[in-house]
Every structure is written in C-alpha cells, then in structure tokens.
Amino acid sequence: MLRLLIQFLSLSLSCAKLRSTSKFKSFFNLLSAMATYSMDKMKTRGGGREIDRYRRFCRKCERRVQRDEGGRGISDFVINSELEKIGKAVAQAKNVAILTGFPCNIDHDIPQETDGPPGAVAIARACQALGIQVSIYTDDVNYAVVQAAAKGENYSIDVQSFPPAIKWGSIEEKRIRDILATVDHVISIERSGPGIDGRYYTMEARDMTPLLAPLERLVEEARRESILTTGIGDGGNEIGMGKVREQIINSNVKFAEKIACRIPTDFLLTCSVSNWGGYAVALAIGAAGAIEGRNSNRMAMVPTPEEEIELIKRMVQAGARDGVSGLQEVSVDGMGVDKSLRVLDDLKSYLETDT
Image (cartoon, rainbow, N blue to C red; front, side, top):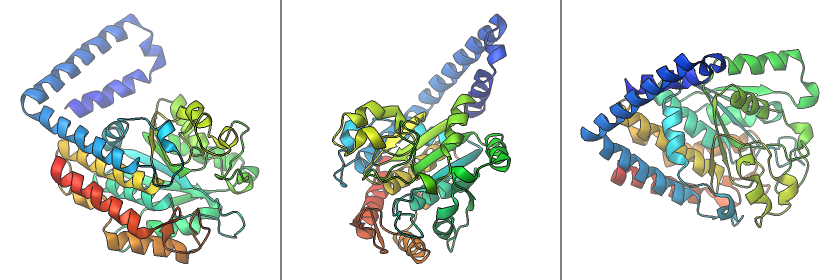
C-alpha cells in the first residue's frame, strides 16, 4: 500500500498544472501526512529494523566499491549514501532503460571495453527477478559485445543499439520518444558522456565522438519529464558525473576540465570499477525488493563467479578489450578478473550478515 501511495505521489508531482492549484496542494499535504503515518506504523511493526539493516548493507557495499583500487582519485568526487536511494527507487520501477557503452579502444574495429556491460547485465537481471521490464541500449559499434554479454546460459536481456549522431534522423528521434513514453527509471553505467564542449573523451582525452550515439538525450529528456535517473561511473567522463563536475575538475584526474561529463543524474554512484557499482546496485535492488516481500533469493541478484568469467569471455570473443591495457583478455580496467570476483564475494558476505 505504501509503495502504491509513493508511486501516486510521484505521478502527481509530474502534473505541473495541477501542482499550481490550492486544492491539489491541500490534497498533496494530506497524502504526505498519510505516507508519514504509514512509515511510522511500519517502524512500530519491525519494518524500521529492516530499513536500518538495508541502509547498513548499502553503506557497506558503497564503501567497498568506492575503494580507489584503480588509483584515479575518485575519493574527490564520491557522494555518500546514494546506493540505498538507487536500490529503493529502481525496485519500485516498472520499466527500466539501461545505457552502457564506452568505445575507448578507438584504434580497433571493435572499440568496446570490458567494463560496463557486465555491470549492466547484473542490474538487468536483478530487475527481471523483481518482474521489472528492462532493456539495454548502446551504440551500433558496441552492439556485438553488449549482446554477447546479455545472452547467458540462464538469462537473456533485450539489447538495442543506436547509430552515431551524424546518422541520426527522425527515426532515432521517434525511438527516443517511444522509450521515454514507457520507462520510469533510466540507468547509465560506464556510459561515455559529453564534456563541456559536447564531445566525448577517453581518460587520456582522446576523442571518441564519431563512434557514439547521443544516448545522453534519454537522460536529459527523462529529467525534464521527472523520470528518475541514475549514473554509475569510475573516471569522471561518464553520464551522471555532471552532478559532481566541479569536484572532478578540482581533483587529480588527468585532463579533468576537458573530459569531465556535463550531464548530471538524480543519483550518482562513483566507484573504483563501474562493473563493481553494477553488482552493488543489483544487490541493493534485491534487498529493497525483499523488504516488500517480492523476492527472497537475494543471492541470485548477482552472478556466480563462473557466470561472470563466462560473460567476460563471451565479450572478449566478440572483440572487447580491457579499457586500460587495450588487450583482448579476461580482465577489467587493467585488473585481473580475480579482483572482480573478490568484490562479488565481499558484497555477498555483507548480504549474509546485514539483511
């Protein structure tokens, strides 16, 4: 009941004309009071303990994925306590769009890196487990790699791609409008975002613009229409980092003023490796859903070690390369896959002890 009430409040807030009337304001104040009362009743029935455990779990996960193991200086632009908000918001969604794709290996025919799609798949699988409709969107040049990631032995996720901006026309504009007409949350994970000059850059300030579809349009339009948005990134040049752009510019990130993304999101999870942020978000979605009694198998929200290794192998076979080393190998951001598996183990251990 509380969940339906909150959704109704969100829908009501998007009605600009109604919002200006005194009758609506009075009605909204009444509903707000009802929501507060319902939450108080939840706490007296033990729901408050579950919420507290959820928050502790999310905070542990957040701290784990925000260790600067890549040495990029992300501590300068980390926002605390975002994960718990992301988990709750996504768990209440009905249709989620996930954006990914970072073609930083621009000297190769298939430039997509191994960071991003695995985290996108983890989030998508968590959404599917809660009955949330989900699709992943990427660039034409990255499609084969993202598709390889999204088709596993035990899962299949819809993947769609867009051409680069120079090839956009009325068809692409209509596709964007159609997506926005159905989704109620847009998540961007390791998705290249434009700098202040409108161009897209690697961490070494190399220009990727000719390869990329302007998928940030989905985020910008979603925010105008009061559709919630989430960004997940690890370097400062991803969609969502516009929320902390000044902090990035003042950080130790190389070429920060040039590469820092200008596009903000409502929520932002800065992490050492974006895939790790994806694992944390997937678990937070599952934990939030479990509070509502929607899914009890929270461990299934993230991949097993075997599944994750196979996923990255499929990506490499499709042409993906490590975004730091540039090599076609089962590694992410210059780190062996064993590091990602240790992070997965740590996050799962928090789930066992805190929820």
